[in-house]
Length: 383
Image (cartoon, rainbow, N blue to C red; front, side, top):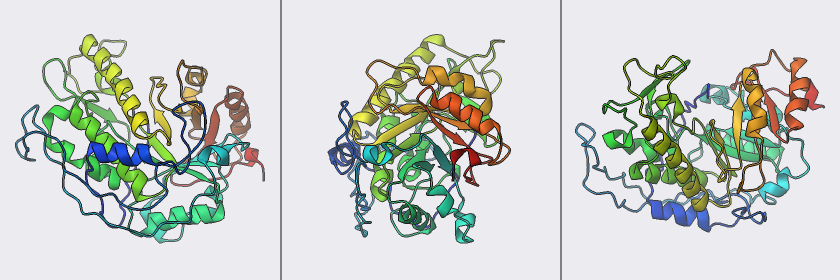
């Protein structure tokens, strides 16, 4: 995806939680919206803004940031249990809150300096039934104030929080989810490597060069589950948006046989690529099993039945929507493919009405943006 969250929020309350705690807390809550089957019964994975108590990981020998050997797991940092005030309980399940609403959504990546200057645009953002937004620490801070304001304006708004689980953007990112994954940077075997053993890198257009985590690594799987648990317990989000949930940018060859968006000289192994694609599907099922009540959407080219849908981003990618919106056997319900028209020239861009009709005819949800830091309400959406 073309965006990354660089939230610089106040306070750091959560570190890595053990996988057992993640399974218990995400899967055990029934506050708002279970749909491991077709029935919709409950919704957010946790409706109390209470940080869990960390337990030690079952990792093997401890590693160090300066010298980690492959296959050796670093222990997650210990955290202290804490209790924070609970917000007003959400009115009904997220499925019920979205029922009958127009299939439109927004991506809210308003930055901390905007929030500090009173530029949160909450009255505009709150008009949307579904919003992808940033992480929030449990302790009161500008982000939690922003999110609470959205729910004050619109008690039925559905909020899902952003995480980039496989692309290593940890050094530039803040939040309980990223804090839970931060220790992976001490484990070399947690990263994708090419056939020659070199770490794989991807050069992104706007955010520089990134390594990718290996979805078949048990350390990575534990950390991703712990990150999602941390995010859903720090604030009562309805679910998670997983950006760059794929390995193709790091492992795929382009039509000339060169590494796709990677560094020159990286060696591609088709069998290894296939195994990592299978690992993504396995991890997706683990995430769903851990959090059966959450709304989960991913950004990537792979259809994942365990998730509610995938997001297609960019006007030039609109031709991908029919494939993304196609039925997949065993898909959890409700199925919610998303398309973000990015960029549009402004809220009166005539393309918005045309693209929205095209996308919604396929059953997908539609959003339009000039950029993700300034959320607008297009004229085509009505008053």
